[in-house]
Length: 388
Image 1 (cartoon, rainbow, N blue to C red):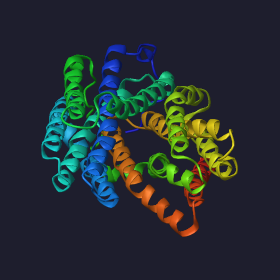
Image 2: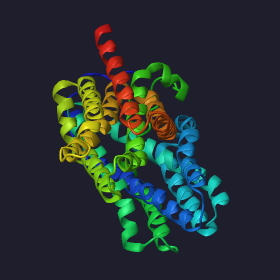
Image 3: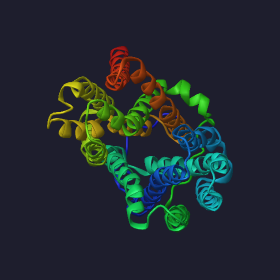
């Protein structure tokens, strides 16, 4: 079902209590996710596990995201959004307890898959709630705020390891408590949460692909862009003679831009429209790809990666805004599930494909791969505007 374009003054009011609860839930979830990846990698590295197996183990969580996505719309209809979110928070915490208990690569493979499978509905349902209660005139800035806070939550996860270390139960307890806290927050704000809408025909995950293919390609681009930068930018820098410390600092600057600039981009979307702003983000990301080789060793690289982080993730923020503008009810739930599915695909496919490109043509395969994706998205967006 397509969203209505008109809103009454009453609909413009922001339900702050429900919104704060939803954003808190997703932020705590982001902290748990941000902590899990580096923690388990550190442990496996200490155990002498090969890099290939460490990478395969890490891929199990996004694989769980992908598989669970197709079940979320039906489960939300039958169980109810709040019950499903609370149940999944308990199951995700249980999976993390089992991971902490076993401490072995082969036991971790299915457990990390289950962790992603149980955690993904928390994210999808919370995002659906947030889009549902956000007034249309303020959707840009609120979704921008949401993206910024979630990015901050992801960054807090790894930072917490500096406080408690990576050995024993303490780091795992942060993630376990975080998942359980998600369920408690949902339980506390249940009376203020919107019901999972049942209007319109039930839309499946596959059905949504037919409704919004370009929107899903934009999500794929944003996901692949982020994962490629986080996983291979240090390799790119090393090939150009950059020290590891500088590479790590540049990645930090990229993440900071991601977190800081989303509110600004959301305001721009309110003024000029989410589609135009997405096109700007795609073209700005492409410009960064073209400029990267020539300025990597100059001081301009610092503002470049900061802005790059903002505009590349801004593609996803604009996708969320368009999702809320175009869909309601069952189509909105299916859309959020499809976003999670495609984000997982982008995370799994992007880095290996770009790594292969770098292996075949050298380190410039990184900006080339990123640039081709951004160029394709820009071309599709322009073609769509001309058709309209």
